[in-house]
Image 1 (cartoon, rainbow, N blue to C red):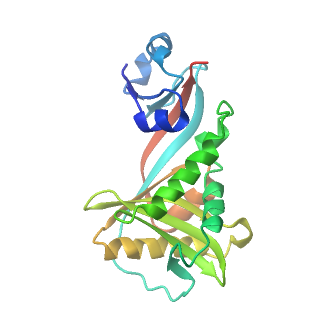
Image 2 (cartoon, helix red, strand yellow):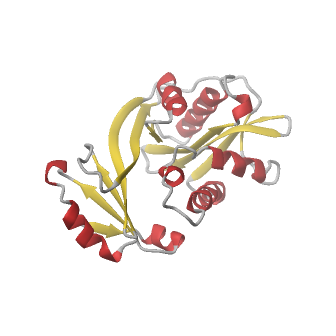
Length: 230
């Protein structure tokens, strides 16, 4: 068992955080984990199968969806735009970003005690807005109100990632989410990227249903655990 120190997470949270990939759940040894994790406060464990132990907490069943974009889909909706900081409200965008993570393991794990969830999602949306080279944020704006958004990051010449997705709770059921996804796919294709993927939580049924509706296929399923050395 090898635990890799995550420098970014450790620096951001202010305590040592590690990551462990469980390659064979049958031979998973919780005692060995406890021994190797002594120098960490928190270790994320990722496994392709559910681990048979009650000593660590299952905090997420991570689903990765993928789609190959075939072509541009015409959208006649002037409310779809690229977020522009000098024209659009960053406060509205940040509020929606916090709403996007309610199913996140950083929100549901009660052992986080230092406002990690809010700090993390605020940092993620800040990075998406300010990374001019690889990231874009697309919004659905009606009059002066931002009703939804999607962030997109180009990971390589052939692949883009949808990051955060959120629609205001009072504006759901109006196809805003699917319009934003289609608009984002068009932008990815304009940037010469045909493959697009998105990660969500299995418990986030609205998101899972949205991606399936938009033609995404399940590519990978992963069980995520948190081991706390408290």
